[in-house]
Amino acid sequence: MDQKRAEEIVRRVSDVIQPVIDEQGLELVDVVYTPEHGRWVLRVFIDKPGGVTLGDCTTVSREIGTILDVEDIIPHSYSLEVSSPGLDRPLTKERDFLRYRGQKVRIRTREPVEGRRNFRATIDGVEDGAVIVTDASGKTWRIELLNIDRARLEVVI
Image (cartoon, rainbow, N blue to C red):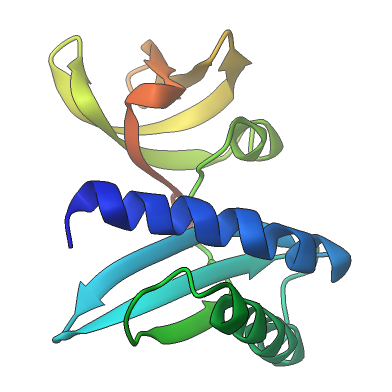
């Protein structure tokens, strides 16, 4: 299966399961569809203020599993995993960067920004479709949301 087809499956799955997640009072953080050890895995990450419980994951897994079986979006067998995004949660939407303003983040870009693709910085905010961050040296960077390949909160211990 090519990357474009996998992205289409993620988009369709997200659209179908979003109402179920909303109904439970949860946030759909991310959907990942990837081959692992010779099998396909569909990972659904959910969250809520105070964190998700095992019961939340079980309920969502049961409900979206049934919907995905009925909708038949994925044309072959796969494993469904529903879990919390963890402490180093991915940031995928503009609202994620706004919510975690002031937090440290690791960002990898698709295309270099002033010669760099990897950033460890503090989130200052979002402006006109770009994330504004400041690195440890005090330099402020403007990174277009569409140029972000991956962004995760930095775990500070």
